[in-house]
Picture (cartoon, rainbow, N blue to C red):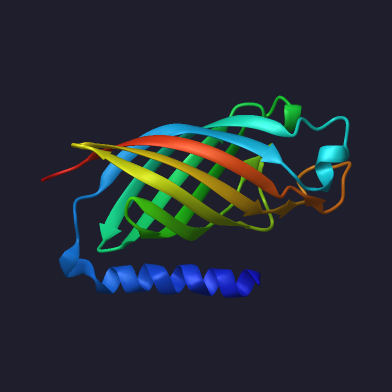
Length: 170
């Protein structure tokens, strides 16, 4: 499944790149992201399964396809006192109501995660003149070995996010 999801993301990005003549101006934004872990680690008393992250985002439109790159920063991941930084990319189809797929990784406690996470995303993007409000939900498929006392931890999660984006150019 992971290989298929990765191939889908690459295909959508390439399709968007071929639609370059229809390119609209990009949008920068920022927002918040609330995470709730559903995987096996939620049963560990030492792990805080909820977290709040902050996002910086850039989104480029190619007709009905949107390609988005985000960097997320979680100040205290899992109650460890350590920050988590997660670069991620999404291919999204739709306009007001949209859905798509994504891939990302994490940098935690001085090391990059050995496996990427994969995500399914659905949301609504309200246009407010030169500004947009994007509210969405994600389901992340995620495994990691960054916790020394736990082996191959399942960090599957549901996340909810909201971002405000500003149009660049005309």
